Image (cartoon, rainbow, N blue to C red; front, side, top):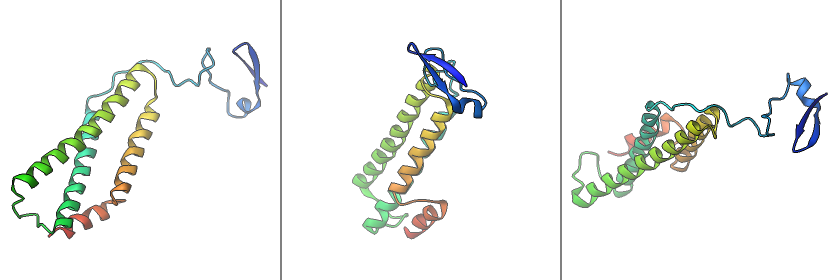
Length: 145
């Protein structure tokens, strides 16, 4: 059996031998605090693209609910609403991405946690908006005349 000393206690972990050994840090942590890395700035584009896709879905839903065609003039109020919603969606996703990037740089979360969080937020957001696939997205856009 493999034994680890954590907080003054000798822990025997029988499953470690089955899995090829346990990897615990010396302070008893779970090993998530790895070396500090630099996050590529290209990842911001992924978050902004997600925000832009959310904006397109919101615009399509708004136009469909108001019975406005894609080619019709929205007026000043509608145009302002479109700009604000685009800025809000892209800003929110960009802010989330920036915070997660800082956590990866500090070594507080792993890249696996970063990508899992990105996918989880994207899936939850699109499911909340009623779009679960590209076919739903295209059907929604085509429904706006």
